[in-house]
Length: 447
Image (cartoon, rainbow, N blue to C red):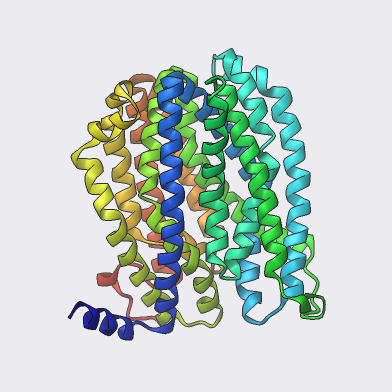
């Protein structure tokens, strides 16, 4: 009987939703594996290094991640959009030119930023975060900016070609597994923060090399003759600049609270908050898995002006996200202290932080893939300004709340700005695309 119900449900799905369903299942399985390994790595860090060591590692990682986003400046998203559209027409040469040009851009900008961070690390540690011990981790992490940026570019290019397994492996699995192995081996000699940051650096380099090799094998042999249009740096920059604003502001919004907590709080408090933040982000695995296959479909459907299909796809993708993420979010609200206690007894006081952060994730899941709907259509500039406003709201709220409430204030700022972002994006999708990702709010004006 169950088999008959599954077959009936499968038959009722259109071709786009079938592809999203299969792709989501694949991507979610891979990303869940990566998340579990990352979770184990975070628990290992927390138990071996304590809250202070976890705080130093997290702050250094935050700085390098922000710098990597600046180095890419939307180039990975631009390559995703180009590869998603061109792959349907087998325009392999144009896709290859886009990836090659993007790599050159990232290597140049990432190299400059790496040198700047390396030189500024002592000043940033002592004057910015009031912790001289942070200088060395920041310097080591700075060396990961270029390889981390390159591996993300390769992953997005592969996602545009619908190589979901390879893309998800690069972004979600390879780094945490390599980090666990390398840090575990280093811990046999001596447990230090230096061992953790060197493990991360080595993991990004190894993953970047693997990503380049996978990409070279993904392009068909006829690439030299398929397609005659030239993709220039100007073409890529026209797409990447607004996307860069959008993605960078998302990252700023997600990390501004951590940085400001680093300025006003202690390393121990930063470590506890970072653990709560990482746990709350596990719920976004559902969204990442669905969007990994849905985003290219959004671009292709909009290009063909199939707005009804676009709305139907976004609504069903939204339902899928909620079904996957709801059980985990329910656990966060029910047993927050016990879940935080997995990292150690000193982390249990982060239970309230986890609950507040989970509120932001609930709203994100309810709104659906509104950000990707804007980025994958012609409204990347709209998303740019939405992300700028949301990032500013997080910075302002963090500056107001963190000095008084510490980690809980940072959690409130993060959740509030996330709700603000998703509501603005939902309204923009409603007005600009005349569609809705929420099933019971279907727009009948789609054409």
